[in-house]
Amino acid sequence: MKTFMIAAHLINYRSKADMSVNLTFCTQELTPGQMASIHYGLNKVGFLAFSPDPFTSQELEELENLKVEYDDTEKPASQRLRAVLYRLWEQKSDGYSVFADYYKATMEKLINHFKNKLQ
Image (cartoon, rainbow, N blue to C red; front, side, top):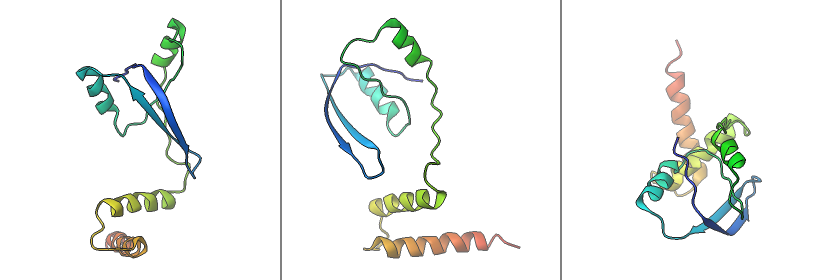
């Protein structure tokens, strides 16, 4: 696990409809090693600890002992699949200008794929 600590300034937050929050931090200049650690953590689930004061030895030990047990099942599987398909459509629309059309066509492909596996 690549744990890293850098000094950062919390400059903004934005509440989202699903009750999550986007946080924006700004740092001083970073070393190549710190940048590599940040890049390694991209799109991974982890922990964020922020304190305006330096962490104590006990707090640092507690942070090191945390384990990620992220369970992405807060939403039903159908909603999660729809959200993933929406992101895919944003990146590669396959000629569909409306997400509903893309969703219907993609779901039909998935249904036929699994229907063909039936005996």
